[in-house]
Image (tube, rainbow, N blue to C red; front, top):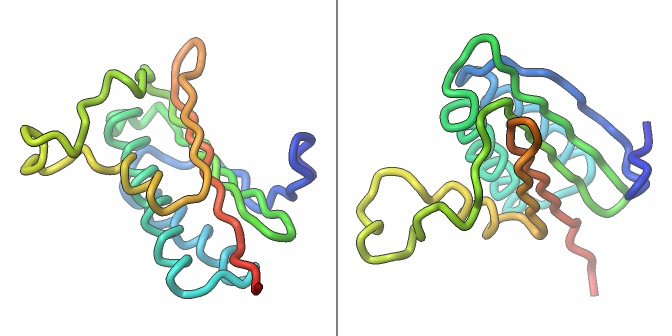
Length: 147
């Protein structure tokens, strides 16, 4: 089914449980599609890491492992790109309220770099706090084109 805004085709549209098995499921499904689209090995690694980080955020920080809450997971593919949408049912957050992971006082922390990695690995990342609750992360990766 085409996404009306972008002309992309929905390849996966699933509701996943708020557990770490869902992290693996989302990464596996995304990488299957990315390989079919022709992404190179380096980009496959980046896409996999971004999906993994985003799913962990949704399960752990968003839904807080609550078995009654789900993670909505979509993969949209176009001729030259793929978009992954991950939406949790948690309380949501404001991006500007998060501590800077590169600030000196945060450099040795065990967590807090997921969004930084996602933004570094994907070409476009949009994070939206949803009403009445939840957070949606929309990540896009374009295929490299030969010059």
